[in-house]
Image (cartoon, rainbow, N blue to C red; front, side, top):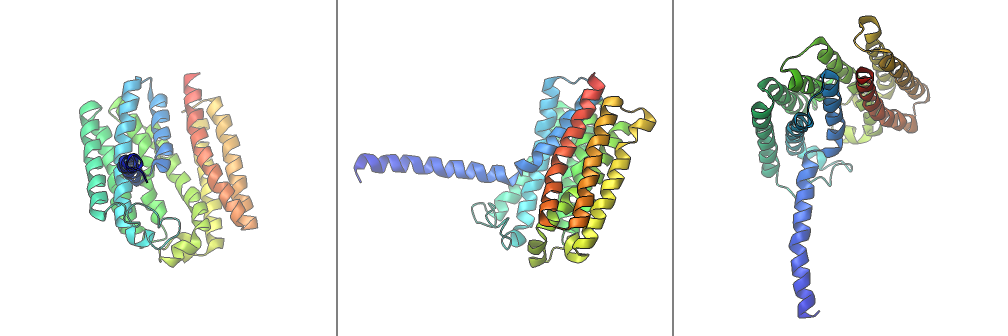
Length: 301
């Protein structure tokens, strides 16, 4: 190798390591999970009023920092079981690319920065709600319930339903029954969404002794619970027809989207195969996004 080639290789190596390091720290924040959280924040803010783009951006940034901090602490806490599962073994902490201490420090720093940013630029209520989401995901779900109870995702899943409350508070510096209703939608959506995924990951969860519902109660009971929660979610999303909270556009969309969700749950209950579980899991992602977008269209037209 020539001296010129050697110099070029040495120059590229630090850049490659820097890109890998930035990629690893971004992965700690779980950006794929964040996208849906941010969507529910933005759509809730649009339902709440007509906030300027700057306020939406600040709420999204603060929310990302808080949820990203929770994700990083989750990476730190679950590093032992992540190392044993094929799906998670290559994550930054179990793979050794990021030290546990660095991941914990990073996560706590992001949470603190989120609270400071939102308190100074939005309001203390929004900042406190975002912090509550962080505490709920880290303390209630990750540390307390995940390794102890098959109801971990039902109770701990409330942390993932916090973004609508944050979005509403960012606009009004208060909460309303509409904000609580949007929280409830995400809360009841979470179990069937996550349990569909857990059916696909049952063997890995069993390997590391995580008491997810299909591991503890079996696949048949998990499918039954998915169907039950899908029906409860459908009933919940029809409440605006009685209260006048939203109009005909939302009502029509909620009926169609909800029926498809329930049909998917029925198919999974009857067929009991991986394909049906995967389809319901993927549809659940689109369902929540489309439902919240329908709310925005309804109130703006």
